[in-house]
Image (cartoon, rainbow, N blue to C red; front, side, top):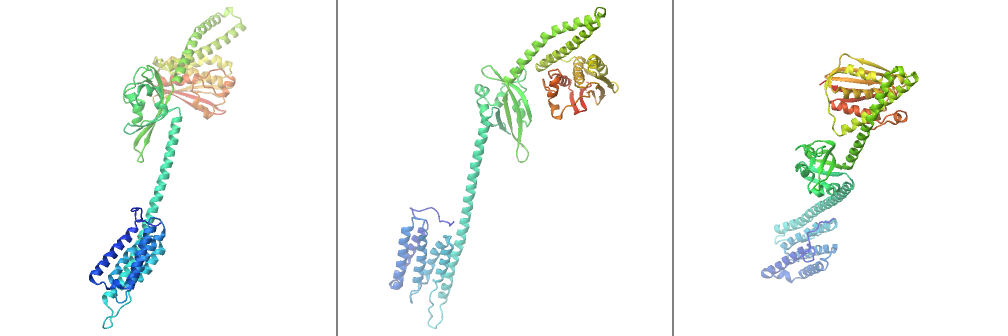
Length: 541
């Protein structure tokens, strides 16, 4: 790529201006010669030189509007004309050689090596045929002119050629960088359009804030949601203006602890549910999850929040809980009557034959199981409504576990499973004994049902580090590791259990909830073929 001299002037390439300047200088030199010594102007050599210059100017006028390399013949012709004028017989005009710098610069700046070499060679033609003086010696001025003018012409050509190549390389590099930048911008634009399309395609709302709390992104799901459309506010404004409610749907979220404020403080959370009032009087349940963003130095730079409308889901759950609670309460009264009458019959042993007594025991066991199921269903519904109130009192856990075990011995005896209590000293805590007994009863019941005949269930009770521990160990088949996490989900039933064991999958969920009410925990340990251990840990106070 050759370097140019700039934009066009009047449609002509900028190089033509050099020829115009050369013509002006030649015209000025002719005027000076006419005033001082017109003799050189009358020689044939001068006429030839002027003819060449005029021809070169004509060529510049013809091809100067095109991009043709024929324009480079113009400076070559100019240098030939100068060579002719430098060789005027006995009429040497030494100063005319300085005009060679203009065509030399032109040819060097073309960036074409061949034309630069031609310019250097033509510079050698500027050497005048020496004219000896009266004593036969050469004139110093003429000698220096013969050396300096060709040398400066060659140096001018070489230096401008090198500069031209460097400029051309720089221009090429800039062009390449511009292309790369354009390609990168195009790729970034395509990526942005793809990301924008993906964000707008998902049903989950996505909002992003910078570190200063300015909303920088909101996808279509957020912008068209009724909460945004009706209230005409951003998510941060909804929180700030008191539109976000807690789970009871009445109490506004605590200032500075809403889903947006927490996210802007750098918190990371998942599935935080709030209710948002709409201007039309309705409310929408929103489940929010937030992840903070960091810059290259690791400093907080913003946050991204995912918002999912779970109104229909929560309303369905509420309807289910209401149904379960209503049905469970309807079952409780007739079950209590059945159990009461069975107990009356069993107490009057003189009027009950042995085979009838066995049948009554079967009825009692199954009625007890139904009562446990009904109580668990009511318990689950009550927990979802946040209606559970603990009745705490000082309790001996060893005695509590003994009473639970005694209630399960008949069922364990029928299943040919023994139950053993292991107490590591005294274990006392301030708890709700009725609810904790229900949690332990659920664990013992499960352990008996999942133990094979001639198996054993061990209940271990101990106290350490300010907490009491109740571990229920069975000798069943064990639970695969991938299923342990799901065991405490309401209504979860492992496939193997569902095939031959009764139940609806609420016992462990209720146990976990009761432990959580006491700020405790439930832990599982299991090995295939070796049984399962479920440990309930409760703080002493």
